[in-house]
Image (cartoon, rainbow, N blue to C red; front, side):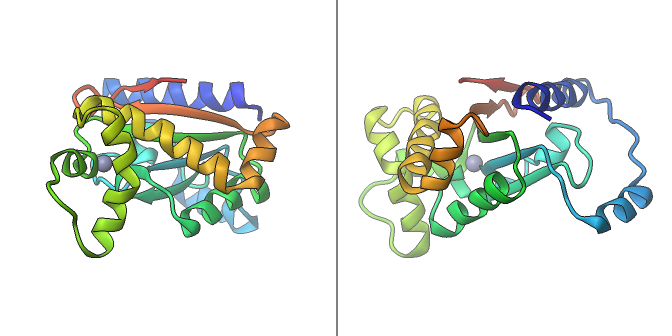
Length: 187
Ligand SMILES: [Zn+2]
């Protein structure tokens, strides 16, 4: 499957989700099929938010999406390694960075006064450059954060950078709209 087809599959699935229609999947047969191995068509980096679930949002079957989830969809070394696994080993033609409206992590970062200690503080520090660039406006920061994450991936993962340059993976920025269930592709 190429990037074009993968995006079509995702967006068709999302259209079903928006309408509240779900495909009937035979999970029992599919589980058996997947014992041979996985062959997902998209690697998706998204927020851990319980309202933003890729398999629901894209009405996808098991074995179709390789997911990486962190609060605020930011990346550290472990997340980058997971993305590389999806791109380099599983050869997904699409790497989607999926932000969402009303993101709690982004909102906290925009409203944060002073510094937050501990591991949550590490997440805030990752979102901070986007927040500062967007004058701490939440909606703008959500979009800017996705762009920063893409840059961070390209800067810190030679594997993904090379795959993108060679046209083996298309990096897509998209935003999930909680209010409607829609996924809007930004770039
Ligand atoms: Zn979020």
